[in-house]
Image 1 (tube, helix red, strand yellow):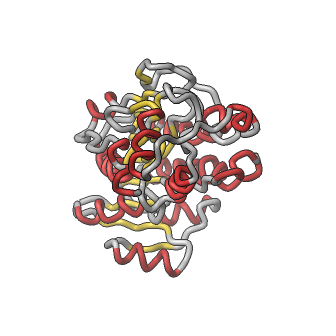
Image 2: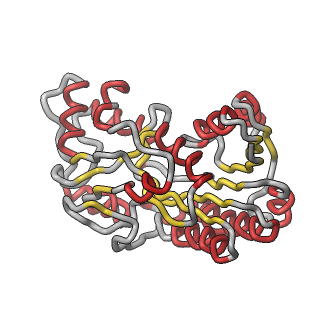
Length: 299
């Protein structure tokens, strides 16, 4: 049994991580930002706590006596808002300020393990090649703070403790806002997966992602990709969606419209065939869901 402190416990992944940790016998404290979220945390078997993640002293007090800290808090803008740099401000603060405060508290208290969240979207175009953690990356306003999030975990590692970063592929969850948006677009006859149809789109099922977080408690320091086992091309996702919605075909969003989306859209248009082999070798974990098969459950 470990004493665990977690942020983002009521998010898409966190709300599945929380009961998994509790069911495994861990004693979990989770950040709650409203009475409703506090009630959800208690229902999942954890203790809600109120913490200002941007206050170093408050963070240090909150994590004292813990064996592990898991930082999953994000604030990702949706839709057209992703094109505005200002829309990423809170997400950046969580990945920069909050991550640094948590890492500093972990180091000062000698907490065994720190687990942070990053993404795979920064990997450059790779065609049909598999993408490992060593592949080249570039960044834009929406992903640049991933550098800071990963640096916070590295500080923990450099101190002699265990610092882990999980680079997640695109989340696929029935209760997520972006999947609702995907389905809304598809029902209008357009493919929601932007970019060349022959390009690979890597997802990670939310349940598989949650199990990865729990498994990460027992891995060595490092950066690990977390994605489905067999990513497929956008054309196959579009064909599956079209079939489930009773449509002959989904139209591709015109490239001129995508250009208006700026760097965020450009990154989403890349072909990314993400490999999770390093994490599978390091952890007692393997992805169980190939997301192309999940559209039938949501349409």
